[in-house]
Length: 154
Image (cartoon, rainbow, N blue to C red; front, side, top):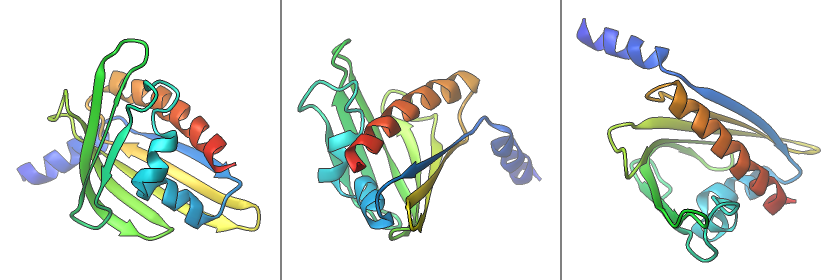
């Protein structure tokens, strides 16, 4: 009984969905998320001190990732990491997400990619936020990051 109420609680936690279309192949969009060399070109690039973005990605089910950077304005160190739960090359990634400063506030990210003649449609879903403020802060951050990703892929 407790397990189903815990599952229901997770379903009620705030989430966000962002849909973006990129003028790039599914393979290129997927590689932007799964190659450390590519990821550091766009992830947090709008706010990170130049040269401070680091990424360690073990892209396989059960593999871990860690991304860190220093905020150019505040000088604050940020690090996020998690575990890959689902990896379908060029189509889908699902992973946990937790900032090093609040490891108990783990959430989940799912990225789905669908290609067509004009590029790739990405459906980005971030679920199980601790509260509405965390959801809203991540929505602002993700939209900035994805704006840079769009420029990177162009």
